[in-house]
Image 1 (cartoon, rainbow, N blue to C red):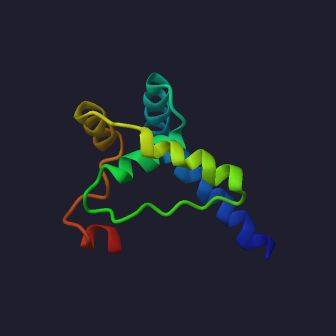
Image 2: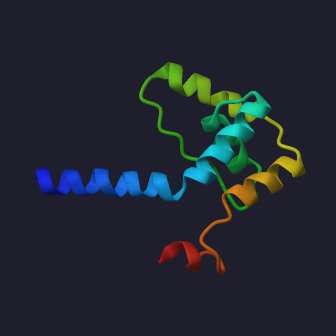
Image 3: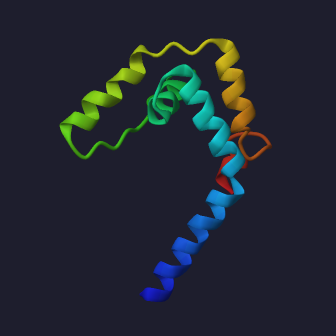
Length: 100
């Protein structure tokens, strides 16, 4: 079990390093908007007409209540464009690009 755990952690660290510029740009954008990254992520999903409903995973009622703030966030097109630039996706046509 220890080997699997170590490789999982190492893989996580590698992904963080790979996406560090994206993460830093995203955090800077959220800070400039005065919002938490989780709230912007949920609001971004809510602005996408293809998304039926974002799935949030609160462990306690306070987390659920806090996540409702995302419903009040209006993201202008400029911000949506910035988010798309920071997180461009895997490339290719959906849903195939996301499936493999």
